[in-house]
Image 1 (tube, rainbow, N blue to C red):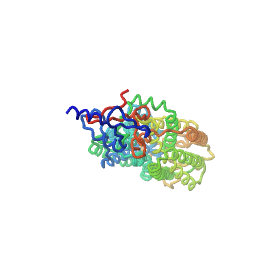
Image 2: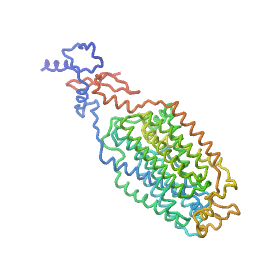
Image 3: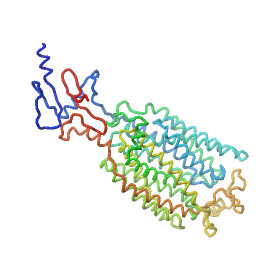
Image 4: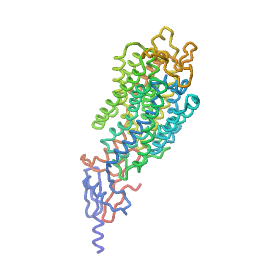
Amino acid sequence: MATDKDEHKEDVAIFKDSGEDKQLLPQKQVQIIDPVKAVNSLGECCEKDPAEQRISLKAYRRRWIVLFVVALLNNLNTMLWIAFSPISNHVDTFYGRNSTIYFSAVYIFVTIPIGIFAIYSILIAAWANGIGAFIRLASSFFPDDMTGFRFPVGISGQAIAALAYPFIMFLPTKVAAAWFPDNQRTLATTIGVMSNPLGVLLANLISPMIVGSCEHVKILNILFSVPSIILTVVASVAITSSEPKIPPTLSASKPSYPFIEGIKKCFTSKQYLVLLLVMGGGIGMFNALYTLMQQLLCPSGYSNQFSGFTSALLITGGVVGATGASFVVDRTKLYVETMKVSMAVAVGFGLVFLQLILHREMDIWILLACFIFGVFGLAAYPVGLQLSAECTYPVSETTSTGLVVLSGQIQTIIYLSVMKTLATPLQSLYRKYEVCTLLKVAEHDHLSSIPPTCGHGNISINVADNEQTVEPMDFTLSVIVMSMIAAFIVLILLLLFRPKLRRMEMENVLLNADSGKELEVGVKIEEEKVNLKIITPDGVQNTNEN
């Protein structure tokens, strides 16, 4: 019996990289194991074995339900944010002077502090969105003799809905990484993030169609708030866990850096910092355009309906571009090349678009430039978010994506402030063309009377006293400065961005058993070592004990 045990102990398997000089240890027999067999052998270890077992991978069908809830939540929350922008003159009449800019800005200001602490949670986002929508809806029902309560209640609801925004914006890449296999990650990210601009599209199409005067703002609030309240219930029932029990990919099975360590790693990565500036700049400029589109177009005589259609076409092009880019990237893995080409073309047509909106009767050219701008501009968005996860791996996708979104919100505030500060009152020579004030809207739409003021008296129509709620502005200088910033950002991307795709490299190494290379003891991947094992009949032991 003792002899048998000794013989068994002498039969060992050693993994070795070099095919040369396969010397026997001072044992009777050494067997060199094929890499595939080695992986299978590791997977057969019992649960009591101290070494890691082979990781099981599984993609659950339920992942599509989770993605649907996240996408719809993203869509509805964005609609609550943007709905008032294309009808700012009517909203300012209903809620008071400059209320539209406050309803939009509160999203940005709330996102920055909340986003720092936001963790992955669909239910928090759903409930904040639903409660905020309900409160904003309630603000619509104050009668004309209580108009002073409308804005405080409405902006409170908007602020609560804004609490959901950082959670929602951080979800798509996290859901894609936690629930989807690697050949569907970019597609899942695209569906999740593009539901945000899709919300912008719907808001810009629906709002001008519904709201012809301030009296219709109540109807708009009902239309956008009720689905958010319903989704709160659906999310509470449908979402039972934030991550699947069995991960879909090897990278999803690996533990992420702790939050503070992840932050440090992000801010010590030069390539990530470049991406942080570029992606944040792109998000900031799109947000600024969404918010100010009507105010940019109305001084040149373009109606609310046209500004809404322009924004909708921008997003339509973006959906086309982002969907196409996701399929290309999932199959070719050309993340960096796709990002650079998309951003360069987008900035080019963005500059053309910004110049065209300063001139009258350029409808067709504005729409064409806007569409191409959207195709390439939003194509870069999901690809950029995936790149943020790639170049910071193994930092959590929530952290890497969250910092990009925060950068976008901070830059949104900067760009909005710059554009509003540099804008000047429209010269009297051009005031005959503007359709910003209610008086001009009535003339443009051939109305027989001035639209109602919803309890605000003459504050929106007394042009002689210069008290209109929407003052037409000249954004020429703003457009020039923003064009220069956009050109600077894309040059930084083209010249300085050369990232290492860490997540993809790690997965390729772990799945490269059939590449013809034998496994190497102590292969180093980044800062961690994947230590291979010596298998004996008595168990599995680590060959690298240092």
